[in-house]
Length: 286
Length: 262
Image (cartoon, rainbow over all chains, first blue to last red; front, top):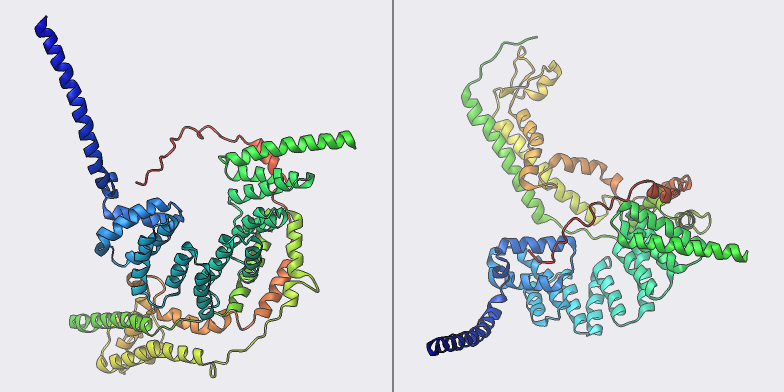
């Protein structure tokens, strides 16, 4: 009995020891792992070519997953810079914009300096330095940068759009709308700008004009179900029987274009019930 | 006149036919790189750019106007075509006819084009004519009339020789045009070694550029827009939607892909 007790006691102590030892080791391991975990390629077991292709795919799809871009891009730049060849410049640009999003000023500055060294007179690089100033909230200097670009090349759309976004960042919604209108008068085909204008109008609750902008987008992209759905939502918000009927038609169109659009389906349901209740009340009063 | 079947010395093939091919090819590639070096950026005119976009918008309105409500379409048509205040009626652009002789930028462009394309062709054509003269190179596979003889058989004065037998100069010109597709394979599309395209551009260059007459373009766009009627595509969309099944069968069977990077 004694030996059994001793044995059991011995086991318990050992186990407890083992537990505490394990906890300590786990803590140590996690410290080590934290330093190792920074490496994307080891986490996902990918080579540098796959990382580069992934960055290209994100570039083409215009994704805004800035944290991922920063993680992948930073490693690519710091460790595989020589293997990238000429691709590295566009990766610098992509990573710089993502770094500004994630508030990584150090990384952004490094990328910008490399680009400036390689392309000293480029408007594109000037625009990037303007964007960095914007991120640091030095709006007046950024404005001066963009004005310099525009003096040199009045057709540069990127600089004009950055100026408008400065106004937006400063909260001057009406001025931004005015500038964007002037921009669109000259560059009628810029779809990104039309979309931005519709958003600005929605923020100002000017739904009629927002609907106009969305109509432009619908005309140029008749098969895009998202524009139909947004237009229908704006019409629904405007209210009034004709607008509701129009909205119902466009929700239906969005569903026809893409039957997986849940928002359109729900919108169709809401509009139909609203129309029904409205026509009922009209019947009752009229 | 079926001429005698000549048997040509095989050294002609090795020392004439193939060298001419290589010469043409490499001269083309050199031309491409030289053009790239001498290339100057064209300054884009803001007004011209804006006009072209407006015309594009009007064209889109004509084609896809049926996707927007009737009133919106009428609003836009009114904006463009109204008798007093319409864009196409009101806006008259000042047309400055671009005289090739006095317009400096076009002059330099023309000179550069001539230098890189026509000059090498003349020089090398002449050299080949001088160097490889006095014998026939090859036979074209189709029969030619006698009228082609002086053109294709330089330096050979045989009356009885079939016109299908050609000399080196014609083989050179054949190569110049034939190697176009090789250039697009090696140098990619839109390369400067593509001579025939450049010649086409020179001929239609004045007609293609917008600046010569935006007014005319406006007028034709106005006419086209006038006759367009609005036939709303969404007239019966709800019935169409209700008549078919929404097909939700596969909607939830696919696994949601995780947001992992790779």
